[in-house]
Length: 206
Image (cartoon, rainbow, N blue to C red; front, side, top):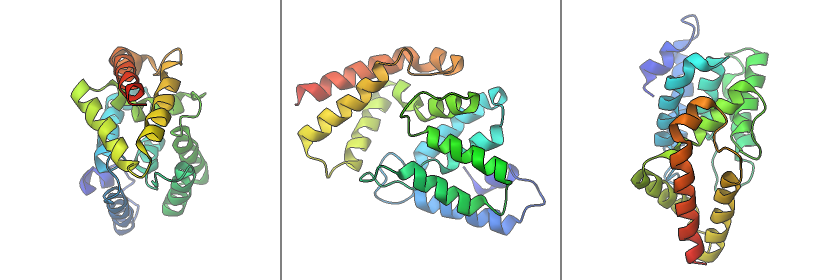
C-alpha cells in the first residue's frame, strides 16, 4: 500500500515521479468520504489476499494493477463503475505499460462486476479476491454489511433489504462462491454461512 511498495513493483527505468503521481491519485480517490466499504481498506485487504496467491497467477503484475484500479471510480448510484474504472486505468497507465497488458488489466477489472463466473485463470482469482470479505469472521462480515448499507443510505429500507437479499442469494445459488481451489478451501464454508445469515436478517425486515 505504501509508496515504497508501489514503486518496488515497477521497472526501475520508469519515471518515479510519474509513478508516484499515479499512486497519490489512487490513494486520494479511495479516500473519498462517500466510500464506507469500497475504500483504501478494501484495496489493502485485496492486496493482502493477492500476496498469498501471487505464485499461482499467470500474470501477477496484471492482477496486481487490476486490484489497485478495480474500484477507483465508485458511485453507488451508478451501474457502470467498472467501465469508468477501466477508462481511468487506461488513461493513467497508457504511457507506462504496453497495449496488450492494458487490455488484460481492463478485462480483469470488468470481471469484478461479478455478473457471471469468470472464464479465464486470472479473472477467476481476481473475482475470488474481491469476494473474500464474504468469508470473513462474523464480526468482520457484519461490519462489511453495515458499511454497504451506509454507501446506499439513500435507498429506502425495504427496497434495500430486498435488493441486497437478491444480490447475496445470487452467490448462494452458484455451485461454488469461489472459483479457485485455494479460496474455496479458505473461505467457501464460512462465506455460505455468512450469506445465509445475512439473507435471513434482511428478509425479516421486509
